[in-house]
Length: 252
Image (tube, rainbow, N blue to C red; front, side, top):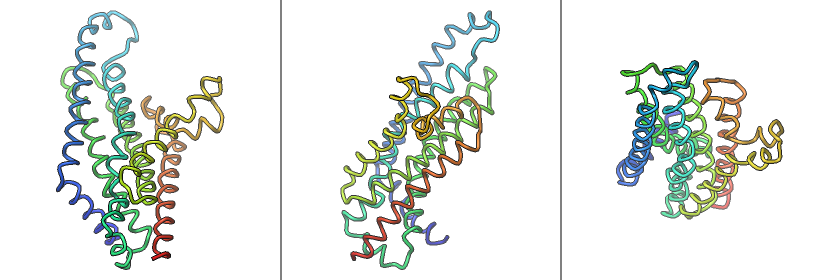
């Protein structure tokens, strides 16, 4: 466990010692804050009309959930950028052989890289989730739904991070790793779209989609099947990355 923490801590320090992580955080927060303020302004304009309607939607439905749903789309782009250097950067800098020769197991290296990248991604999710908390001073938020949605986004981000680590393990070019992670992540997120257009909404292809298992969290539903799905995707991608490191170690 100490070696996993060592690899993760080294990656975290390296990320935040460079401007890229800070720029990524700043741009993402600025974009989300802009969307948050626009949604808040629109809500304030229609709030008097909503008060006159029975069972009308509140700030949680009209501001918070759209913001977090928008973040899920942004994560498809952000996570590949956060993971592209994890192993591909090591290979390109010719430092991966040193890491493999350090006596650290393949899975431990992969888990350390995963945690190192996930810290940045999780920070983005938590910052986005904190924005709507300001509304609690002026309106009644569904804090339970906000918490469940945040958990769902963290699980979604973990799956995308693991996919990014796997793609980074299979190439020595960070840009190619980012492109591959973006393609695979987007494919998994939208795999059921075509099926839904054909009227298929309860088949295996729908179940395989990331978005199918993320949406219940936005409605405040914390289901074990969705949690297990994200954990399985994460585990499978990390095992693929470890398998790739094993082949690289064997080839020397």
